[in-house]
Length: 469
Image 1 (cartoon, rainbow, N blue to C red):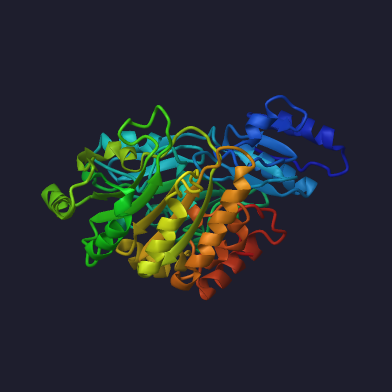
Image 2: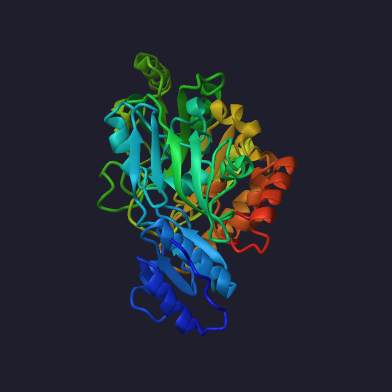
């Protein structure tokens, strides 16, 4: 399709009228019905105020939106779907790709081609019918592209690496509105930058081609212990993961379960420390033996571990699927000091008579293929630690956001002597996406990313993604 440039001399209203004529999807301004719904993502703590929202129905719509922004000297923010915090997008063009949901699976090459708005559920289901699995995260409700561009650590990460390691091809609309393909041999430097460089910084990824892996059944689930045992469970887990087989990806989660009807009665309104994970090795009996070590150490109050079709992987993390406001922060550690355990427990377990300020803290065991693939990946520093810690807070009402944000920042200050300083981009939100994202890269890789950015987007039109400018 030939796209003629808009003249910046015409009025904004006329330009919007022309854009609507060119776009098959929706174009909404602040005065239009549906604007508020269109500008709001899954995370309700972030409500941007873009100049215009473009709901893309096809790749041509993406091209038109980007070229419109270039002609009007506007920034472009990209939002797909899933649980990401979304860009702030104030006074920019917000490009929503959630309608681009195509997924094609090739059983011979063990690959999937996935459009920008597809969620992992659309990939996992048909892949599992073929005995294959993608490197999805803790929930199938997350969008494939955004998750992958930020790295993507799931329950197969120690064995197969991050989701960004599995990409074979990117289709990208550049800041000039040009469609390009990037592979390890075609536009190779751009391809490298996209594998872990973060979403929404170099253009609009409209499709990815990813590898699938021969995983159909895992030994997975959760062991729930009462919060009173939290210190003991953390110390036990610290010993248990030493020398762990890469087929086991595990985590320890300290969580405040809300007193809501959809939470099972034995768990409702209580605080638990949970050992969770998945064994993806061929010998499921070995996975059971590893978890039996926990059962022999201390019988859990609730035992949810067992053989599981990988199609049921959502049941490990049990992430919410309904939109809600959430704040999160993250740190990498190379070891689990006793003082870190104290800080985490104090930050999460509420004092008697007080409401919790943090929903949960999760400490994931990394290493394995994640670290093994780090040197060649853009986000080399943001995946080389041994342990990944992140906190999630869910404000019950708007003004609670400020207290929870302060609590998370104070907790990070206490952790400062024990962390590496690196970050994992998918667990950054708000201002941290631009101010802390640079800590996902080594100095050499950061300089290389900046060269790619300067060549592709010298005017920084895509300034709402992960900042490495």
